[in-house]
Image (cartoon, rainbow, N blue to C red; front, side):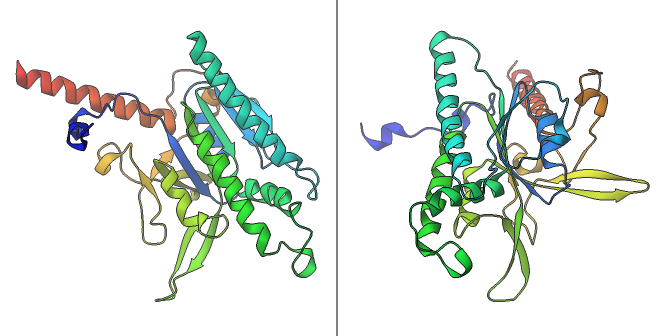
Length: 286
């Protein structure tokens, strides 16, 4: 087939079904896990790599799979992550074959920073050579990066919403000396990882009178130019930052009337925007 026959217009792209692939960064206590588990659509699976799921205890529609390392010298957690990835793909393929709904609508990987650590535990077993003080040597870093990249890209290809939490590294610009932030990881993966996601948000909390408010930044700024949102195309759906009004009664399933801002809310905003556009188009044609 000639390449000219494969051309298609951007107007033909179907925006009705949006799958969220989000890298959600932020410091400890910024509400990453809580907000992700509270606002991701539908039935949620939390892959617990950080071993800190107390913040989502009692949440509705949330199932947890542990994959954290109890022994820093063993690769058990990384082996478990490999089994989880294979199991997820088998579950989704089986559901598709039977014409059934998949077991989960959203998968939350909590968190990426710990995943690099458990991948290194596995990588250290590939070679006995060590650096100073028993630290990883040069030959350990590349297998770790390749392993994490392959695992993430495979999970991101699943036909459901994927949210990955991570911390940040602070860097100094080589030319002007200014400080900026990148997702925490190894080597060049820090700059590659944001490109694997449609959404890259930064979570933080801010003092408000006698309490704290939780917020997401969803568009690039001077010190965090990796932030972006394909859902909020050209800033058409919301203004930055988003304030997350997390209603504990809704989160715990005690009340259904309130709406939580976050991932499901974003999808609702887009659906309304598309519906309004279709109505306007149909009205202009009639």
